[in-house]
Amino acid sequence: MSGLFGVVSKDHCRELLLFGTDYHSHLGTQFGGVAILGDNFKRQIHNISQSQFKSKFYEDIFKMNGTMGIGVISALDEQPIYLNSKFGAFCLVTDGFIDNARELADKLLQEGVTFSETGDGPVNLTELAAKLITTGDSLIDGIEKMFDAIDGSCTLLLLHRDGIYAARDRRGYFSLAVGRRGDEWAVASETASFPNNGLELVKFLRPGEITLLNSKGMTERKPGSEENQICAFLWIYTGFPASDYEGINTEAVRERCGRCLAKRDGDIGVDLVAGIPDSGIAHAIGYAMESGKPYRRPLVKYTPGYGRSYTPPSQETRDHIAKMKLVPIREIIEGNRIVICEDSIVRGTQLKNFTTAKLWEGGAKEIHCRPACPPLMFPCRFNLSTRDINELAARRAIRAIEGHDIEDISEYIDDKSEKYRKMVEWIEKDIEVTTLRYQTVDDMVGAIGLPREKLCLYCWTGDYPKPGE
Image (tube, rainbow, N blue to C red; front, top):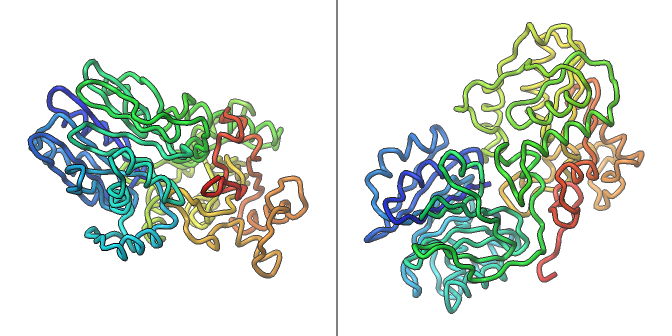
């Protein structure tokens, strides 16, 4: 994912922009970028794969003057994009994934449009979004046309002389919230960026909504809809614990997930409950509260400098982070029967090689794994995630059971079926744990608290609204 933050101020916006953007560091690991508009546009992009956002930008940003700015922590492409268009110059940051990017880029190239930015893929997705926006009759019309063209998602902040245009994609896969501090306005992916910066939450943008923030305040330029499909994984894993989405707090949801897992387990005779840092901690706290078993820390994370092992694009980097960031405490591990709560099992390799291995080596008597979401069956269509379906632990299990790949996996999705039970048993053996029990879709949805139809559950069920629906 990527994290977006924008500021409109009557004075210099740079300090609030720096620290507001920094509160999105958990969402991306590759690039950080800011753009500030004063007399002219000033833009800065840095590789942050080996350093923190604020340390990279602290010196630079205080040399940039202006009353409006946007920032991004990017998981893949370099951002912000600067474009001098028929609407005037603008800078753009985005969050999302355009599944038909190659098709759209080829069409624009045939029409004489050129692309200048490079990325890890065939085209920088933020530049593609910017070029699609310029096909409209106005910025608002261009954003609408871009939404019409893409298959996937694109939430954005667009910095222009008019102000900051904030737009949430049509299905609302990812959140944008508006905050206020006196005469200053901010818009962010994460509401966790508000409290310590003195910002009060004003509203969450609705799906498809386009809002303009400038010195005059906040103006809705295009109303949104109620056709929400917000990503459930925000609460399970990607979101920061202090953030709210649609008014629902992440930490509270994770605690409820843990309680659901404990209720289904009953008393399985363990000595302690542990969460895999960081996102598994609240799930484990909920499990401990419900089960009455003590919450302890057999594995601790060494400093925030080791980021998330799921978001980096290369397997080598993911494995290195997974190996180095968790330090075992033998005195807490040895001789104990342990429940470990994890946000999810994606590939299963890190859990097996760098998490449970450390517990077994530390002398654990039993390890009971409890992921807070169901088995992941499909790579995300709407953001940067596992792109290869064959990497998913559940798909490897299905292939092993069936002897080949199959198209209809409905029985494996059904948590009451015999094939589901066999799949879980295969993964249990593969990751080398005593027992494995996944969260059910119904319990996960109940823990979040939104109606099922308001959530994107594609990773688990394969269901999503097709383009045009």
